[in-house]
Length: 219
Image 1 (cartoon, helix red, strand yellow):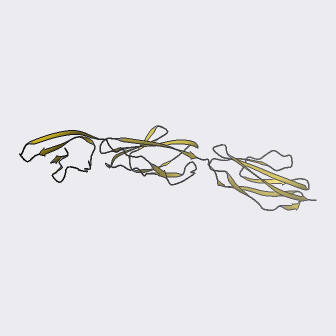
Image 2 (cartoon, rainbow, N blue to C red):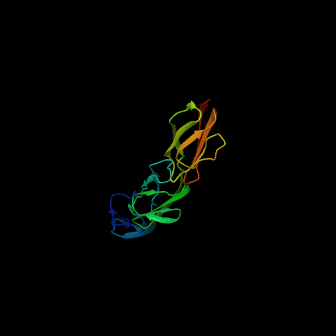
Image 3 (cartoon, rainbow, N blue to C red):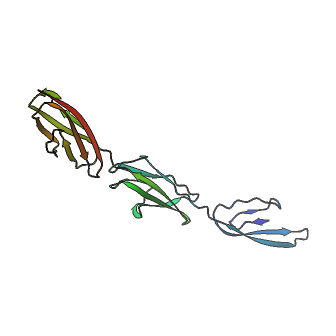
């Protein structure tokens, strides 16, 4: 008869296949009984190692910008079941749930680490790098007119549609006058000619974009 040391026995045959469900050290015993009812027992030690959990995760925005809400979700697996999650961002503990949502306030590479612990206390860890980008600066400009007779007064307005506020404005009206740092402008061209209005918008992160518009003042 067989005693596998895990509460399971068998009298079926001399050769046995047995599966141990949990890790641990087991003593398997085989007892042989002959025709005269004499017995002999042989013991063997079986060591079953723990099946380690596997930590893994994904996030929902492939290339997020700063201030985006990014959700991280664990795809970890564990034979013995997962009992604990620990997330860190750049070494700082952040969350202890299966998933969490956070906002990045700085651009660049950020290291995201997930540690999972199973019912046997075994721990698996994985680290992935997420690249967070600054928002590109985008803006439009509007003019009340692009052609007129001298002296020509224009209304020139700037509307930022993307970027991270606050914004700095720098507009060169192309006629040698001082540049303007205003978002909305009134400007007068004294002499006739064709002028290029060039505007550069700089956002909180130092990112810039430049736009040029042509205006004609007739004599």
